[in-house]
Image (cartoon, rainbow, N blue to C red; front, top):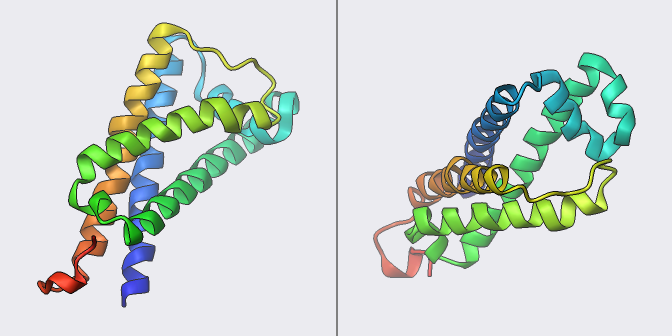
Length: 164
């Protein structure tokens, strides 16, 4: 039963975070004249490099799939950490915000540079601030709230069963 709660926490938190984050990214890109297909191809370019931009809808779909897969992996990492670090569940808004900011930094400074992403990683002020806020409010906090909802419900009122 507890394992099932963990899976739900990952599935719900990761899916909500992925949907909110990609919706923001598509909206921001559209505001700047970039179609959704091109934005999703840029996600796929982390795996395929420049070839992602010539693959049409299939590479856009791959980009969406990769985005959701990464979100679910990050949600799984949060859920696993929250089993050992109780404050993650007791303070989900603060911890989720910090987690989202950490994911933003990790993606920009580790994942993108190590991937096949064919563009230099940039930190344009407005885009950087909005992307950071997106990761805080639309990514990290939903994952943390889902973890709290699905994992805390499995704990009894006895202090020995609560996360520490």
